[in-house]
Amino acid sequence: MKRWTCAVMAVALAGGCSAPATSAPPAARSGMGSVSVPDPCTLLSRDDVTELTHRDVTQIDHGDGYCQWQQEDGQLAVFVSRTDPAEFHSTVDGIGDGACWSSGHLYVLYGTLQIDVYSRGGDDLPDAKRVAETVITRL
Image (cartoon, rainbow, N blue to C red; front, side):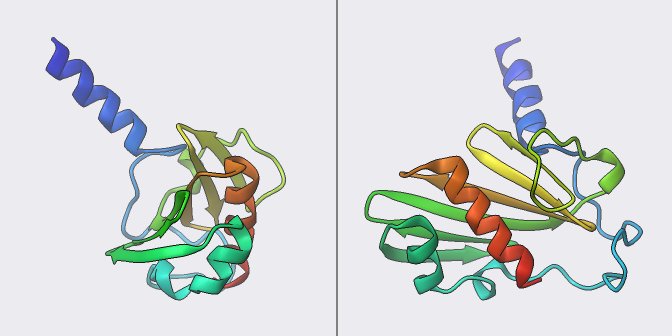
């Protein structure tokens, strides 16, 4: 029973504020079409991250769809993936096409992209909002 409960919780948390990402949903924003998902490490420089979070970057890790900046007193991670806007449930106003805050992650809908910002070590939600707003201007 414990294993089944953990598996259900892991699936629920992984989805953020939406259903699982899909590879090619219809474009919700003019001009987005089938544009590939950008590499988050190309959207923010080391200096950008330091300025947005007020913490120095000590290491940068990246992989397919995510970038993580280790910091002296925290960390910032940004994940970008496709999602179906109809499945996104907003609870935070004023950013992107919708947003929600869950388990330390700010999930932001922007067209057919979901931007997941995890900020730890400072003023987490305001830091995450600043990061997401900056990322949106670079998409």
